Amino acid sequence: MRFIKHNKITCIYFFIHCIIVSLLCSAYLNEFVSPKSFPYFGLAALVFPVLFILHSLCTFIWMIKKEMVFIPFLLLTILLLFPVKKYIHFGGGKTSQIQDLKLDNKFKVLTYNIRYANGSKDLRALEDFIIKQDVDIAFFQEIYTRQWRSKETFLADRYNAVFDLVGISSKYPIINKQKIILPDNGYACLADIQKGQNIIRCISIYLEPMFLNKSIFKIKKVDEAKDKTKIVTEKLTVGFKKHEVQIDLLSKYIKDSPYPVIVCGDFNSVPLSFEYFALKENLVDVFEISGRGLGMTFYDYFYPIRIDYIFTSKDFIPQDSFVNKEAAFSDHYPVSAVLQLKKINLSSE
Image 1 (cartoon, rainbow, N blue to C red):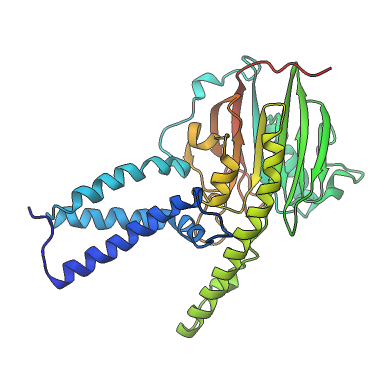
Image 2 (image 1 turned 180 degrees about the vertical axis):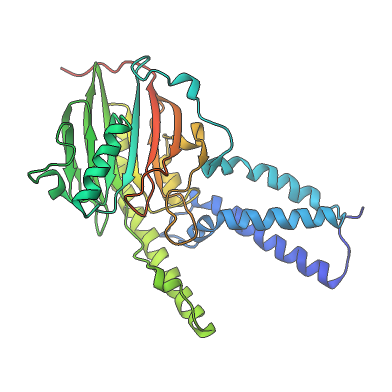
């Protein structure tokens, strides 16, 4: 076994593998480099799963060829397995601990971009789904506020906070609700929810969409590829920069909260992106801790990605989290979680 065979083809292959590894590692720079400074690291985060698969295949080929260079590449593969939990969990959640949600201050949370659920039939079916799932606190994005104001109000038997395209629906009383004003096409709201002696601050977020459509990915001629790649790259990088501004405003409501915080929504951003790291600061990604199965929530473009999240402050213990693919009311799937509040937060008088 040798470190590497010195011939032209092997050297080119080694060079290509090094480029793949460099792109993989560059995704981690999103934690330190803002989109305003350099937005292109966000693209590396977007294709991280593909890069990881390519890197793993390249490493396997080095092993087959009995080249010693596979050792550092294999070690890197093992290190890169840790972020894989942001995308997929092979084991189940702590299901043995969630048999009775009424015990130990446990409750169920769901976040769902419902994509407007235009038809009344779909809206009623969605309402039945929420009731059947026995969701304590539900976070919605891309809603019509009129769906909560019509004669047949959506989830009328619950406490609701609805502003523009985002909303929060709760079994428990909402003692304070507020629209969070974001620039451009970002939307957010908060609701302080009284659960027994506890007050929980809930924030529903819908960050700037990228305004992509399926037609832009249909390339009939080779000449189209360059132009469409440029358009997609520009839309994404502009979106990344707008996200940064919106997150700066949202961070204030998260950091200044006097109560335990749950942050949910459609971030229009993937794991390892700047948005992911920035919003997750001092928070916990529930799926990363207690998820089961695939974490991908958006499948509409034939490239499944995870863009819908449940984050909490460290006052909560994540018990279980999964993407519920039984719901088919949108181009997104909802994310469910069971949370347990660690300590009692006495309500202020």
